[in-house]
Image: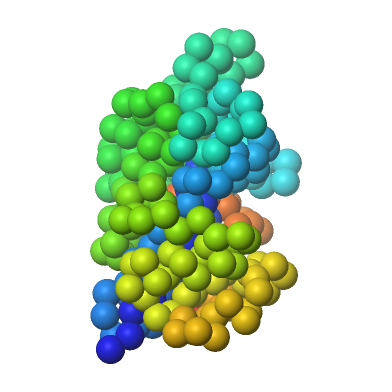
Length: 244
């Protein structure tokens, strides 16, 4: 019997690779896997924590959606949304996001299926960035028919803080009863692989972005997963090419 786990920071409207890794922990092991949201990590301004890209038909073919936040040095679970701040000084950020998403995707095949649930979350965003992001992550996962168990770092039964990132991830795997840790490809640049020789094996995601039909010509990869959700209605997998 084997059980896999993975971990990731709670980014805003993550890209497809996030959900590919989320699903993979159930596929790799013989038992259901577990995915840990690293809301203990430091918030980074202008990182994926509070912004992501959607497809448009002008310029470079994409645009940013930002959430205004208090960006004092603090972990993600303490980062608060600035509801009083308006986009370009005129429009509430929730209304702006919904308007841009609607304008860009209303003619896609699956927009009417999935937009109402997204809108419900946006209309009640709450005060903390991490709570809003996790609600969006769970909603998109549900739309992609992903049932992998998702838990927050602070929901773990015991303290797992290590002396470095590798030791912390090893400790998380032990705590959740996993014997396989699935890392993103970027982990090759910082993980101490010797930490995973003691009962926990290490696997890398090896993700290659799929290609699928988009609303506009000239395919743009690495957008928010909303783009694939509205265009094809399911999770395109690594290396997959969807022609119609």
